[in-house]
Image (cartoon, rainbow, N blue to C red; front, side, top):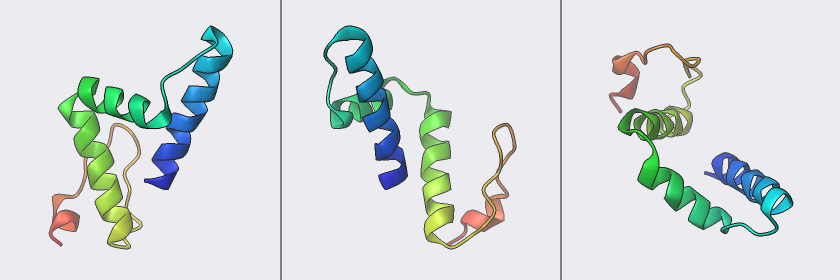
Length: 72
């Protein structure tokens, strides 16, 4: 989550620089969750699960997950 939070903090800085104000990182995260496709949300979740499980198999964008890795 820390890695993803850093992305929203960076987005907040860029939006503030461009427009003078921005939603907070938490608000940006909620907005993304509300508008992201189910596949995007699923991919982030699966990546987090694989990271927590200690797997070093995180597919590159466009690759499919080996579903057996998710059988925790």
